[in-house]
Amino acid sequence: MASLAECTIRKAEFDDIENIMKFIERYWNPNHILCKSRKFFEWQHYYHGEVCFIIAENNCRHEIEGIVGYIPYSEEEKRDVLGALWKVRNNHYPMLGLKLKLYLMRSINAKTLSGIGLNIDTLELHRRSGSVLGKLKHYYLLSDVKEYNIAVIAAKRILDYNQEKEQFALREIKKADILMVLCEKEKMSNKHPRKSFDFICHRYWNHPVYRYQFWGIYNENNVLGTFIMREVEYHSTLVLRIVDYIGDVEAIAHAGKALQGLLKGYEYIDFYLYGIEDDILRDAGFVLQDDDVNIIPNYFEPFVQKNISLDFYADSLEETILFKGDGDQDRPNFISGDLLL
Image (cartoon, rainbow, N blue to C red; front, side, top):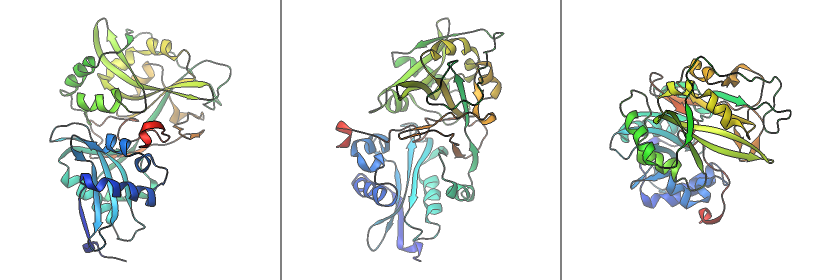
């Protein structure tokens, strides 16, 4: 068992990227997109000149012994940050994983730090670092069809939206400047994490692989919020996945009728989240999957027909709102073409 004194923990630099990719290939997954595509690596983890990884390097061999990635939600100096891939090499150095996270917490000048998609083996380390733990809730709107090809429906549950609520319209947003208005409004809220307009454009509007849809909730001509969605196809069947939301969460309760219209042509719409009151989702007609026996798959690359629990850590649960698109959860596993370069 080696001593941690033999390692230097530091922020990664641009020249470290190749070695980080090799580390991921050797010690995590040889088919992981971050070791297969330099272009995708730089898109996700090289933001405004910052290589968003902390590395532990052996002082004698100058080899990487552990890494932890992160994703800043703003180009500002002090910003909310989401943790990403976290891996150490074969327990060669005891408690190195914890040391890496503690270094991350100290060094990146974050307002808040959280992360989604935790491995069960790391839960105790997150607790020891001072983080609190939770689970995203999984909601869905189900189409009333005879046969389901993606979901497994043992008990069909279709709720009506709250017709006592005033109903607002959904309109697809085609111009990014509308998102700027919503991001500016979010600066006034107390919720975390908050995403800058620059980050939203980088993460969703200009994604190198996925094509996201932006459906704004409008009260007449006033945009209150927008769902960020992605269409997924499997065996000629479509589902629509809400991966993020920007704006006033109360407006979701007024979008039930419009969501029913949007549901046409899809087997279901699903929505992983934490921090929005259940009543808001119920008023819009969403069913909480945690409460029933139906299977609403999360993995499509490759497809896995089972329910998936998404654990998270955060500095605090108060004022924390998280979605599936936070961190590195909604990313491709299969790539082709130019991204392989």
